Length: 391
Image 1: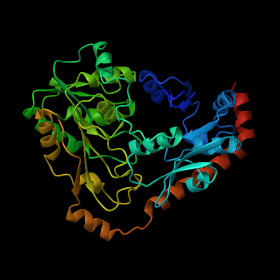
Image 2: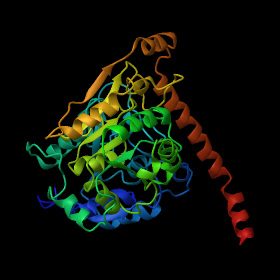
Image 3: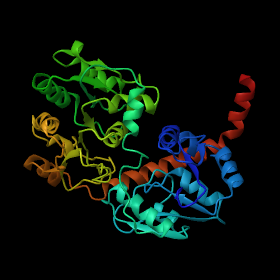
């Protein structure tokens, strides 16, 4: 779009804007004043007031909603700017989750153009459809969206050596997640096996909400003094990419760090849960995803079972075995693995036949948040008085 002469305004949270800047995107960057997923934004009397002022000043010809899982932000923009041409993705069939307060199908009725997708379509191909629609072009886009294949290596030269030869790992659960991952005991077992099989050090990375999860696994290793825990210590994406680009590979969960590792063109092996099905499998040759193909995949992480069978069915030793093999391959190419569901998992589903569980859970959440918002608005005069007295 930039190369075709479009003038762009990008509304996003800080890390997205940082990566767009590093990638050479030329646009008016607007860092959102509120988190569109947060309760605070949904209970605000004038949500995104400052952001809407920047949109009005920019006076766009088209508003394109990039998330195919709409948030409260898209709902509010639709109400605030009914006169502007807008559009985005439309899920034609099946369960369509959203992180707002409304039904996304009702929101999409206000779109002047809809880009139809199906639930399991990977995000890279969704975005490719969007580009084709907006640009009127049938060009096949490369998944390497950065300006140059040498870009991560250029950044890496500016970063100090972490250690001689190492692999980056980010296996720990994030605090506050619905999905509790593969479990610290599974990751500790696999990394212990790798400790004796490969000479590389492990460098743990992640954000502040991953410190506890990563530390538990780090401390459970046979020789933790041999490794390095940088979780919570990389302050910018540039720092994190520098660590990734110098590494021999990435092993861990599906997360933002995993996607950054993929664009650094290093071997990647990631354990995926089933919440988003295969939407976020990275489209890069050296990246491999592994998950269990259970019938309930696509639940949007609202699991009604006592354990996450979409990952717990991965056999012991398989992850360490595949990663060791990937490191030894000259092209690091290894196909994605969607393992058949074990019998106990299918029996568990059969004995817990809750129909439409994700839809029910989402609707309960929306109803609760709407009630919280109404309560907050009704209490606004009291809150204002309390705030004044506190001063």
